[in-house]
Length: 322
Image 1 (cartoon, one colour):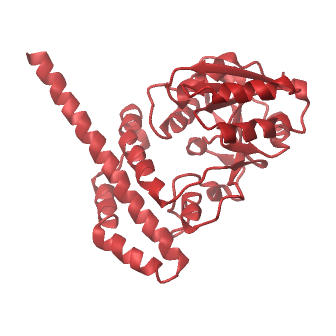
Image 2 (cartoon, rainbow, N blue to C red):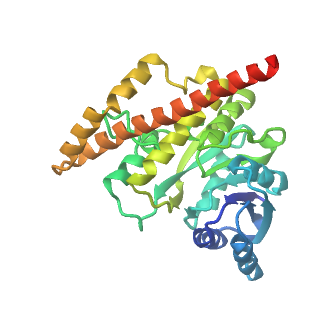
């Protein structure tokens, strides 16, 4: 078998069904790939969907259930059960184009060394309205060609054929042999960092090289609005302590100067000024407004988790003394 597709899922039955249907209809030999769905503690709807689709599917679909343990744990479960020579990691809201698998496999034939991975392109699903907020979240270079949102940053890969560990996104494939003794760190329970940590660890331990193939295209069906920014950035800020503790050399936790800049950007007068400007109709001020808000919310999460960690350290010290 050439490739195994691993999909963690949690209580998103409708989009999971579309995700699986798209994968079943790939222009790839049906006996040469499998789909592995790992239900991470969700309800039984995922099992029903997989069972119904598998009845008439020419592609093998395998289903596993585990108690809620996080996306890293679900991916590990999939890796432990994968049969393909290659492994493709996607999420349940990633919708494949018909040639997704063939493009990944073709790229691996060109980059055949064990430490060479392939990154495909993810675009926001056309059904989702392209609001200023969606534009901000999916472009990390809107402001001074350097700063922007925190969902994807594919624009930074324009004209390039390689990427680093920061682009460890859900449309990436590996030789399974590379992952025999490497797994996702399941202690990373919060937003996003388990991907970056895994990609960085593969880079330093295995010499990982990521080749970018935008023809391996999938769409992301992920409706978002402005209300989602605060919890997302709070989670990023709170969880940055974990990756900093493991890899301080990455500088993911901002120092005093950067925190001071973020605090200024996220201050009430600055946010209010950007809000006034964006309401006058110039689209670019929306981006500045969301960027300022994102820094405010990031610092909220950073402070909250930092204070909780300090409280935990004090409690540990008291328990040792009494």
